[in-house]
Length: 139
Image (cartoon, rainbow, N blue to C red):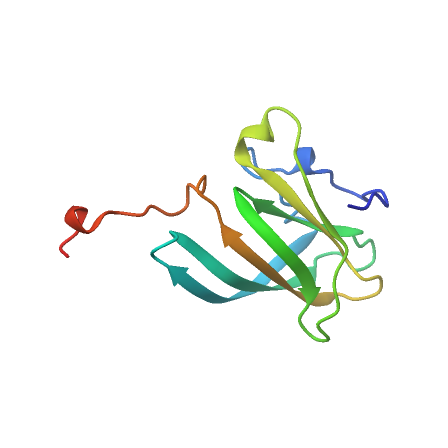
């Protein structure tokens, strides 16, 4: 983990009551997914490429903050060169603690646009997916 000090938003200060993301400072413009579904383990794994644009380049944030709930994060890297990015998971304070963690990724200085590749796997606690037994489906 790193602690270089966040410039601008802290996860608790997101304008959305159900999010920790700093989307008024850095906006996700594109999402590309490459996923594998393992029905035996009940896990989805793979990577998510997020193309991010700094909204106010004249006063850029030092980090971009994403919402992360019950994911096992493997790595965060830059799409263009594959080099690792500095990142950490941080639990927000009350009342947003129930909505998961803040994935805080350091933005490279001087770049208005950057794409990150996040490698992850779902966990048994994930609420975004449900695994049904065959008898609960049409087969």
